[in-house]
Image (cartoon, rainbow, N blue to C red; front, side, top):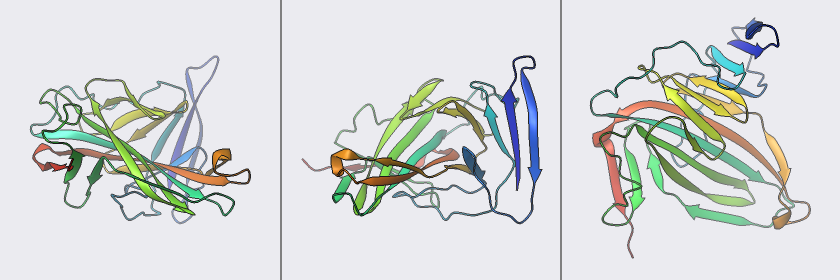
Amino acid sequence: MRRLFLVASVVISIVIIGLSISSESEAKAGVGAVSDAPLKISTSMVTATDTLTLAHQVYLPLAYSNFPLLVQMPEGKYLFVEYWTYSVLGAGCAGLCIDFPTYDFSPQSGVLTIYTTYPPESAMVLDDDEIGYIGSGESLGGVGGGANSNLTKIQQYPVSQTDITLHYAGETGTITLERRGETIILEADEGWVSDEESETWDWLGAECVVTSTHYITNYGFQDRDKIAYSYLSD
């Protein structure tokens, strides 16, 4: 595992302050960790791996890597990025179930199924000159259950969804995005996972403690002809 940290300095624009290399130890996440396999807990589950690759975590908003920018989308492809939150409701919470998924993505087959009315809503249909989608959603555990999700079309950069902003993609599918002031660079098929975050949800009980983990997965370029629509009944 190798991790590269860059920080801003008053005098020097960007200073390299640390480089640690380890071949066996697990990641000790600071703000988050990057993996070479997509990491998330959602309706489109991917097996997680503990093997970490070189992670660029730049603690300077809008400081970018020098990889080649994407000038034109590959023929017949679209970009798919997902931001998922898994929240575990503690014993002090009232039971909660959510269930309204907008899409399901299978990393194995590359099929993106979009749940919509007939004819498909224009907000769900990817036009030829549009870049792709950001999928976002949440699933619950503990005394909670179910999942919901949404799709946002990427028409131009930057584009924001929930608390991430996608700034641009490179010609190989590498993306630069920002989450809560942290700039994260992910290659295609690379995932990022946050530390656990605990908070109290008073509306589910005075002692309701919820622990959440956030996952970002860059699925890179996918085949447009594998976008399918599942029509909802009235």
